[in-house]
Image (cartoon, rainbow, N blue to C red; front, side, top):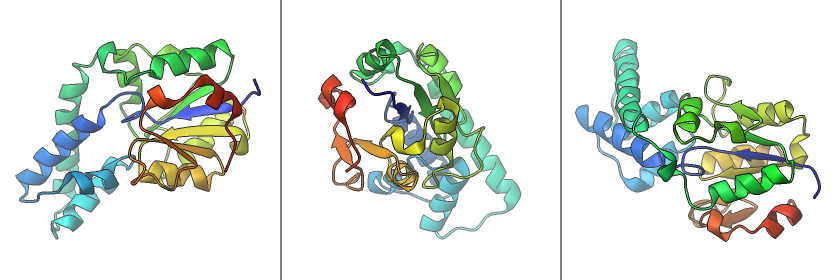
Length: 218
């Protein structure tokens, strides 16, 4: 099997923390008189906390002070972490472990590339942290997806050129970031939403080991 770098997003790819983000953002938005839909929530996936709050304020046509903005971000993270601290291995999405074990057995370099600043905490909670050779998260980057910075840093840490990396993403911004880095983008989720990806699967149960061995840039 040709050596390549495999880079995984976290939320909605390895574990379904996306639902916890939605609950926390929804509570925050409602507290300042804003509501938003599940469809709008798709725009928050893979996006930094600052950018997400900016989007929510724009949807509600609201302007707040810098101090209030900071307090809201802190509040959202607190609510989100209440859910995270209750996580266990049972929340790993279907066949993720199978794929990670296969790549490990094939000595393929694996990295995490996530906007989350809680990535290490979550990986520890679900007992997956040892599966990753490199972890690049919100504490390591200055530019949010769709900027490719997070994936380019991950590729560098794996010692792999970007064109030899494969990214697994559930967000539009993440797919765009992978494409901008000239990596192979594999969308995990709704094909209608992730149509810019090179390949799209509903989840990892649809991904075969043969696909991992043979996948090429479209």
